[in-house]
Length: 235
Image (cartoon, rainbow, N blue to C red):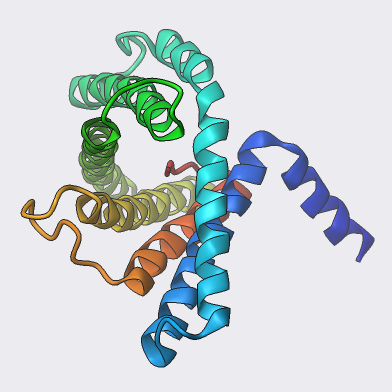
């Protein structure tokens, strides 16, 4: 029991760990609140309360992301043009993805500042821009994972029965990790398109519970990937 509590505390004391927990709670409340509202209507206080919690957690994460620009910039500079990457396609896909991620933050900051009344500007355009950049980043991530899967399956095919179980196990683990990353990105991409202006694909058509379901699924995959040493990104 003490170890479990210590593990939770360690997660919550780190910024990324706390953000993942907040993200999961946010979408879970949205999922449950949406289901309750659908069954019992808007008069059900429990459903309304859950949606309020989801909204507040989402707003909290938006404010905390005001401080993410420098860490993203540091990562982008460290990766650079990906000269250490052996696969040229993965290299340039990663560079483009880093660019989309870097541009996402200032667009969201301007949208937040406009909504908060800090600056005199229309936030709708900036929210659309930030959502579009997030969606493009997710799309790039899917393409990168698909490319990685192709390479891993080729590598797996070249392995003979005489290879060490550890080597074969590592390839299977990487394949599983990339598949989970694709599922996570697809879930978030579905929500990103929903948050685009009406008329763009299924923009604005998702019910609240479905948005919560997609986000919860992505968040749980992210927590699992972190626990086993993988990585997946989500906003």
